[in-house]
Image (tube, rainbow, N blue to C red):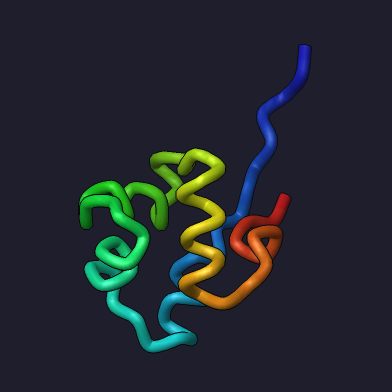
Length: 68
């Protein structure tokens, strides 16, 4: 059995670094503000397409959005 892996979410850091509000990031990515909030808080994991879009908007490699 595989144990749970803790994943650190860096989306908020990069969003604030780029001076983008959570609502604006959600709009640019094409998800609701509630969905983006859940993703940022680690309650929800985005699908691959949304993760790539978030990375593109924030101008960082997708690998920098999460750390294991």
